[in-house]
Amino acid sequence: MKFWMALLTLSLFGPPNKDKVMVYVFLYEDCVISQHYTLVLKELHAEFASEELQFQGVFPNTRTDDMDMLIFRGRYELPFEMMRDEDLSLTRQLGAKVTPEVVVYNADQQEILYKGRIDDTYFRVGQKRRVTTTSELRDVLEAITNEQPVTTASTEAVGCFIQLNK
Image 1 (tube, rainbow, N blue to C red):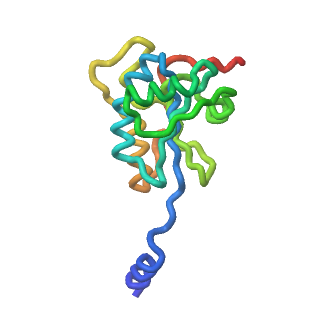
Image 2 (cartoon, helix red, strand yellow; image 1 turned 90 degrees about the vertical axis):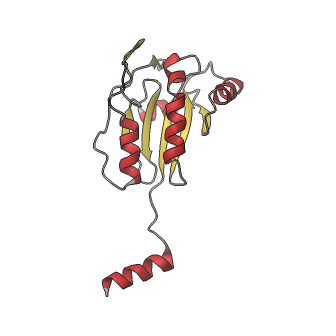
């Protein structure tokens, strides 16, 4: 009887609402590491983006203007929205320190689910592994999509430093 009630409830009201999750990707158009990760970001967006899980590019500096963002987005064919964070308010709020760095944020719960690198390709600025061995952002997005707990809360991102002392 419980099964039929659950099925009836699901068919009448649809699935329960999922929390809205934002994947903030901190980028800088002149950062080679940001440029490198554009293909991975496009693939992750294609696989995981939905109404409940959205990507947002963030340019945390005063040097990037709207045209720079449009050129970067077009050159790398990034399918998600871009924004400038000239006053660094979002950057500071989410604790980003380098580009590229990602912050996966549950907007409904106002909780950071993950902050750090996209994967372990870069282990130091200018130094890449031949083979990527971990893909933390992919793991986090899979966990969220499958309604599983996120097991890694943070990693150290490698990239171009964001100038926060302004």
